[in-house]
Image (tube, rainbow over all chains, first blue to last red; front, top):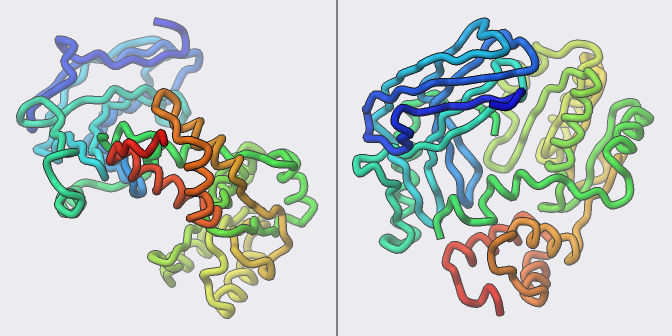
Length: 151
Length: 196
């Protein structure tokens, strides 16, 4: 691990999971400074034609982590929304390890889906149907806390 | 094409930095100081005003200023509560950034400006009109700028031809945001016309 780096290692190197599954891994860091805290966040974000949205599902805080260290973590994934890609919108889940008050951060994309594969609808449905899915998704995400997020 | 792979997705276009044509970021920050920290970024829709505003915001923060941001658009007017919250948080020396100042009514603008001048230190706005505050810079676009930005975003993808880009630029009257949306749709559908 290089100085000034952060890393997230998931158990068995898995990156695709079923909804509500428990996931575990190790957060590692080797920093030049001594941060007050590090935060591991599970969040979704949209990518596509419209304005980006994002929401945090869970955050684990590591207080006084020291400049070099690692912590094992586990968390329960939410029931949805599923990882999805259409022509208009993609829903992407990420784990992010970041300094609580700093600019250093690393992200790892994961898939959350019953099939453990991203649901792809680029050819199967029309734009208007996809718009309907997008609206349902936005209603669904109302269950989560929306917040501004570093990207 | 999946939305996440589209080179003209909002996430990618919003991450583009402002292309300075003339005055640099530091030059603009100096001019803002000379204008007593009250100035406007002027320009038509899709000319990079908000992108430049974000860049200057970071520059001001790096210089130790406390910045308060207010974003107004057609769908999200400035509410009474938002205004009240903002005014309650202001301290002398703070700078308020208002994106979309010309969407406030004349009366709203007069009240807003007088309150900010009284309670804070600075006001940096974007506007389509020139009559609100002294002009810091007038943003504009060109077919060459659009071509450069489109080529930058479409790295690794088939590049649209200059002829097509010029046509799109003219169709959207120089509004680069709308030009990107146009290209987004073309790439989403993977139209063979992209390369023609």
